[in-house]
Length: 135
Image (spheres, rainbow, N blue to C red):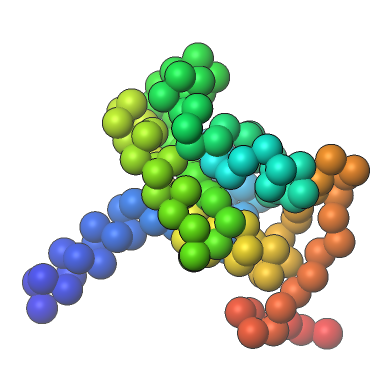
């Protein structure tokens, strides 16, 4: 029992999900949301309020752009992408309090959270396979 408790406690210390991140944004919690995907992915669509810092650039850029002690949440495409883990590791190696947003951009979009691209806000779509949708 304690093995399971320890395992899930550790996971929750380093992971979050789209609905919790959205709730934190709406309530004004201090955090920096970092999109660690490449330039083309960023241009195609991103989470409103996120900053773009591909994971390969974190070691060089983060100390100059994100104040030490700032909570960071990273995301990539989806559960099938490990760029979020690479980004989280890079932030952790720099000493940041970092979490990975499980589900990535895919589940953010599927839950209907606000997104934008280079042309502005994107249409919000609510996917009933991942959430309760009320009419």
